[in-house]
Length: 162
Image (tube, rainbow, N blue to C red; front, side, top):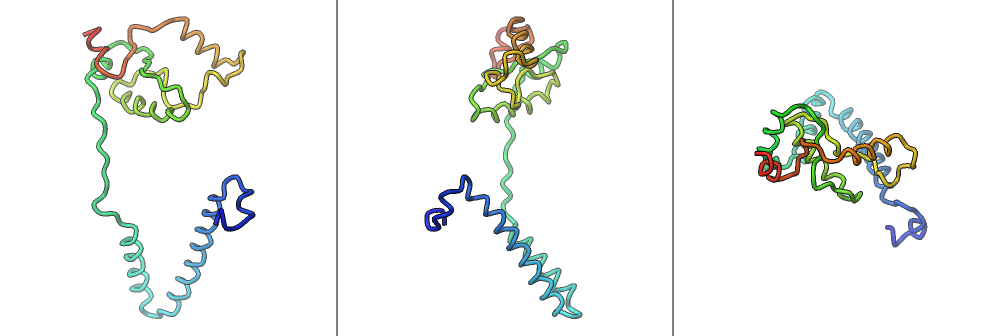
């Protein structure tokens, strides 16, 4: 449709019209369902149950695709026994497309509950104005240097401290 209808080429995101189409189809389906159930008479409850089962069967995915959680390194158990201090996880993913990879560090932090310096955030240092308080805080962290409770994702922490 994007190539066939000339006006669509002027739109920045023509796929957004898919939401409108789905909403209209849902509305028309609801109207048709109301009409069918009204004609069902005394079998209305049975017809509604059969339709609900048909919808559930349509949406069902078997076998259900469970994802395996990543194993949590023993380094985090060691970190949990240490005094509370900020933790920096490395490697630090700096590119915008790789920011969701910081989410794994947030999951791993549930093993120690230490405050994380990095994590999934929209704070982009390069885009902060010079006098922004957040930029100044990041500068202070950089000046302080890497502390004794820094965590690298892997076994280097255990090798160095353990």
